[in-house]
Length: 311
Image 1 (tube, helix red, strand yellow):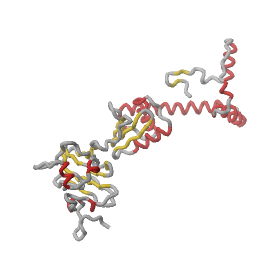
Image 2 (tube, rainbow, N blue to C red):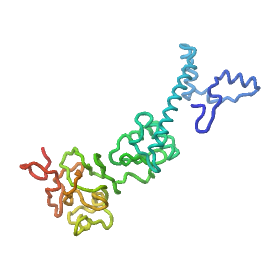
Image 3 (tube, rainbow, N blue to C red):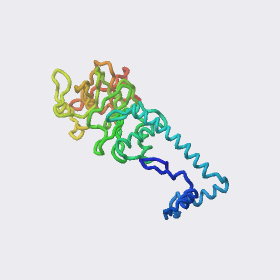
Image 4 (tube, helix red, strand yellow):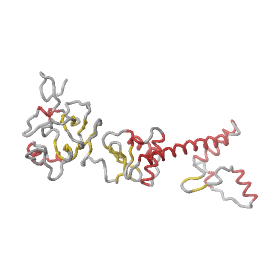
């Protein structure tokens, strides 16, 4: 307990019981005693009536020593909170906090707790703080976490408060960033980086400033002279209807250029986009009438059978 917190001031907190009693007696004030202070059901009373007397036998000045330790800890916590508040102000935008701009260590954890309290009005318990710290420890893909007061939603390096009905934008658009792996439903994507995989990754060459993975939308058409409807592409490839809303579309500069595992990937761009269906191998990918398309998988040395993972 601190002498001042949450707008409440406790001026007598640092005065001992004997001094308080003496002041009241001199001022002819009858103090009111909380009867729960005698109950050993509460940990504070067990420490006060059992632990402290035993410690006093070892060190008569133990109460003062503990008070000095508490003051020192409070000063350290106050300095950390000040640093955290300053860092948080520099890293916070109108609707999110940039995790890359927060410091490391305890100041970062304190900043995250302060940020949550400022956005939701809820003070996080230690277990909730630890969960928020774990969420913010990674910047790959999108993740969400339910906490008192709302839902923490991390989208790569940005952290924001979302409504409890809102989760990671699995059916929305997720921007693909160079050098980072993103997960979307049961797919994994990597732009301009290698990716560990049990099966072969499908590779496209894309030349665009903004590359996203998203679900299909009404009226979607493929990029190209004829601009086939995405709905017709799924039908021709015999993709089950129940899977179409969760099948990824790759859009480059707002144009659908690739449906991994369904259409032939573009090959003219400078950036390599790898796509892997987790728990699947490349031999299961089809294009129209379920015929395997060799160009969908990583190029392999001559002599190896196309469409199969290396052994």
